Length: 570
Image (tube, rainbow, N blue to C red):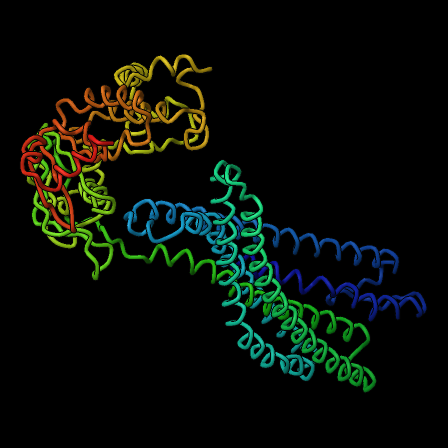
């Protein structure tokens, strides 16, 4: 605040030396000796005019340096505050996206979320800087107007006539600019989505010869963004023309009145020049403020898209009274569980399943039966709309998600790897693991040999999404990750469906080692791999249709028997 006031004071002084030269020095140079000069009441009779002129010109540089230097300091501080706000918003937005349940991410394109984190969040910095500019300019405008008022109250009041019209222009264009800025953000997000999907699937695109189609899709999306940008810029240019015309009209009126006052002897030439400079200092920020107001609307559009996420209610909330889940034995119970992605359509209902500690239970059923969704209830990726899920008798809604998930390992059909080293991927669930523990986990997953055969060994980069590794190698890394975590509950979601029979057999041997002594929930379409497990749950028509051991279910001659028979024929 104080720095802004001081900076504005020196800005008001910057044009004064030239007015002094025009009104004092130049007339004195035409009189005998020029000995009637003073500076702020101080007699300068002993100074020569060239000396005074040099001093006044040097003063112009001093005022400029002081005003510019203080302004620079204020700008740096403002920039730092804005960037800190950007860092905080980005971090909170990214963290909240990670905390939101899978239902949120299922409904939204990942590229759109990425766009909000990377680009929309930058609007907060613009909001900070522009609002500070408004504050700074307002102080400058008041100071400038008061200075003009001292010299000529009529000109000062005349300069205010354009302000109501500028406010009207701001009001008229603000909503249009905000709406158009929102459209641009959405179109740019769509461009990023098309590019990300096309490039991440480039192998399929090239395999099917669809390069032209993908380019056409991208061009169409980019064209929509271009048209939205053209529309916004056309609106901005129209508004700039109107505001510029208002400024020109105000300036013309001021020069007319000012010139008449000089003719009438009310003002000197130096004073009218000083007033014209002040008018420029009044109108330039005022004109800039109108553009800042429209810029704020554009920034508000991006900020609003960020807060749409931050304001999104978490469908799987952490209870304020949630407690840490103690070390568990691995008993898992689903009591009268029902789940649906919306209130009108349930995926399954009335599910009752009990797993004793160390027991292996397989879930089978047709595509879309809800197997993966049901298993997602155990780590609390979703909450049931009815019933309860319990671990060792603890309702999952009463414990913290972090303490629950710390006791669950998951191996998926497509193991997700990060673009880093093999060592870091194995240790992802236990980043504090020692090198010996990581190697032991890799050996138990039968991954150590192929890791050591790679250049760099455990320091080898896996590439984007593990692209440098085969499917089987990626799966073994995922199993090593589960071995290292050593959790009492294990979830296997189609862990071998993408593998050839030989690799599948080798992976199943490794998985059997991993499953030993753990409560295991497994999903698979390959019944031969789960026919002899402790318990099988058969899903169909949105509910559990059969439960029991494999041989018992075959003897019943029901749904499982049909699946088993079809599997043997294939």
